[in-house]
Image 1 (cartoon, helix red, strand yellow):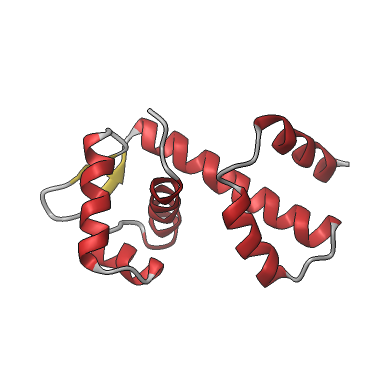
Image 2 (tube, rainbow, N blue to C red):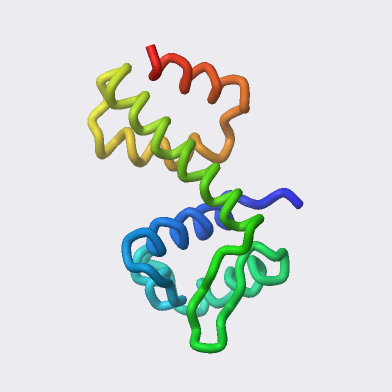
Length: 121
């Protein structure tokens, strides 16, 4: 199933918060993304239905194998694109971050592979 940009952003945020805090709850996601608890709750229901996350009884949100795979791919695109824009093109880091966040959802695998290769040179 294809995941929308918003779903990818949620998965990436869950991954980042898990790395930072060890565990994640809906309120952490709401605070990080500056979204309402209702919006996050709705999104978590969809991600759970599509088997990207598991909602633990104590409220913790855990990525499934598919969720982790997707979140890791989005995060990799984000970090790589930010580096490329900043290091190769000289774009201010804050602007590079914002642009990478938008580009990461639409970039083709071929273009991304080329960007990744150029960073290894």
